[in-house]
Length: 511
Image 1 (cartoon, one colour):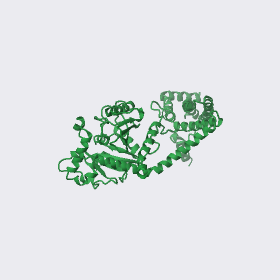
Image 2 (cartoon, rainbow, N blue to C red):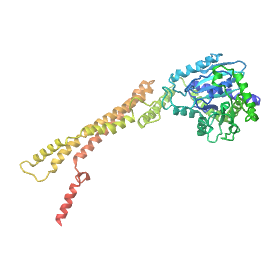
Image 3 (tube, rainbow, N blue to C red):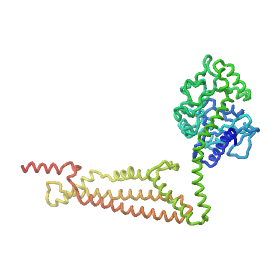
Image 4 (cartoon, helix red, strand yellow):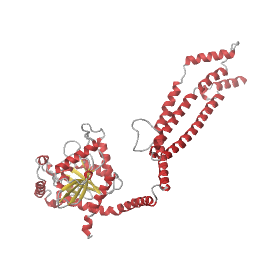
């Protein structure tokens, strides 16, 4: 394939990869070379994309219109039609239908409550008016939630943008309206966070015709004000009135060209401005970008393919009932069980987090730090009752005699009674922890449902191990309480130093 034709094939190849990843639901697995379109809500992103196609096909309205990433693959072709990956084989020739389909497909996943989703919609537009470019249209940056949008909508959108634009393989098309301050441009600010040196950002300045009289964006467009390695390109989109009046995009292109040629600040660079030039630049930049990133991408793909081929090979050479295949699957399940169990107890960044109730490690934590102390507090005694008990104990110990001091035996009898009461809540706490551990085991072995005997045996082994440890734990607890009951250390500082003061008194007296 000769030089340029080979280059022309690069974008379609990446398109195929993109479709494959979306279909498999592993879109983010490999970092594909792509161009992501970012900008504030009313920066004119939609108009730029529609001008490329020469058709109105994107949803419009107030609030966030783009609520899912739209992977827009433009393909140069003699006939004009559009196709969605999610309804393969259906050709759309009416672009109003394309808009309705985008809206319906967005609502299908996000509901009509203006929420957002990061699962992309793949749209291909074949047309003689386009050059091969693939763009990802992302939701416009917003500040304030509208209607029943989630309160953290701004953060949600930023997170989605970062999912795409942090990758080194992604070029950023930062769209900024000329009638706002460039320094506070949403698009440039967010691009700067991930691309501080401006190496992969392409600036697009829209609404140049809406600038105040006597002002122009010449310094920006000449890349002098906030320089980017790839520079800025200015465009003039159709006004809202033009769109509502269905002004023909071809006529709008002619008007754009006329505007640049007739403007004293832009006349000298009119050939480097406007939508057709932007299309050519993007086609060129994306092609070069793919060429640069392709070797690394191919290596990663080959590695993944080799791993898969190895696995497929194993399945080819063994019969489905081959014991070694079964053994491998079972071993993997047991390894996974170990990981799942550990994550449930230790806490994790797992996707299946229980949001309805505490479970696993969190529940055990609560048993120790809330339930157990509560049980201990509940057992607190009534001081009056205790004093009465002590009084009876003292009198019973002295019998007929009238004692001078409180005998140790009275004190010990009462204290031992209290210590003994610790046994029940402690053993109860162990029971609750064991119950939760068995619960976790049951949930973690759910994935073994395909092999009921393996599941049964695994559960039996783990549960009997837990029961064994439970027995040991209870014995330790009882031993600990027995130790406390066996000997009372009245020299301990908790005894308000009574023994010590008596001791020092005795010493004084003996001098």
